[in-house]
Image 1: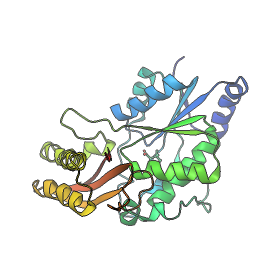
Image 2: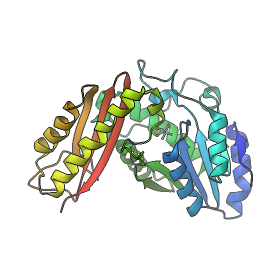
Image 3: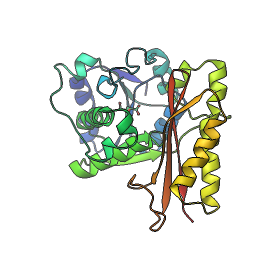
Image 4: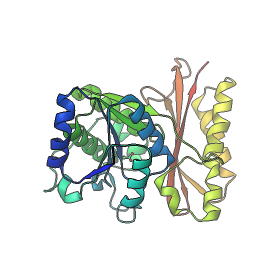
Length: 286
Ligand code: PAF
């Protein structure tokens, strides 16, 4: 079936109704476009699991702070459509901001606690914007499953909590971070990097690998783990760490060495030049 492009909520609901009545399963891959292999992995997974695959492409203004890159966030719907067609998505939902928010939005979804910590502390309102648009997309598409990359690890936990708290009837599927051969996590924002910065960006995954090795070798003191991450990041002059977080992977609570969680999540945000990159790793505690 050729890829269909739908731009309005009414048209999308109309298009999905017969499929739902026919008992077909629907997989949703929410994105902000400028798709890369990481997104393709989510679409492939959705294709394997569902009868119908819907991908949304929407740069959501609610989740950008006033000094963030909403205006310059990369956009290329034609290229996105080609990739989605190649990966056999059925529908791309690409609404305008006016279609999604015809009036200034007065209703928000706030996952308290989780949204305000770590990355949420650095980017006030970010997770509220994410939860609100994802909740709205769930309402419009009513998928059976929705797919998110683990690279945005805290985002994934916020969405899981929102789904549990508000009883959204769907399964959230987290998909491991996809990396280039040099270890750099794929991100639409990598396009901002100059060749020198692109090479410097390798330090993010190197710092996580060093910490993961230490945890596997028995280091569980969060301060020591943080020092390992920061030590590797400090070896790269272009890297300016904004966040180094060590948390229990399931709750994102601080790690208590006396009551260790089954797995530790390492989450970092690092500025390379003007570009803020994030990366993560989850390491089992043995
Ligand atoms: O991860 C993203 O690309 C965005 O935060 C999402 C989930 C599509 C919501 O706008």
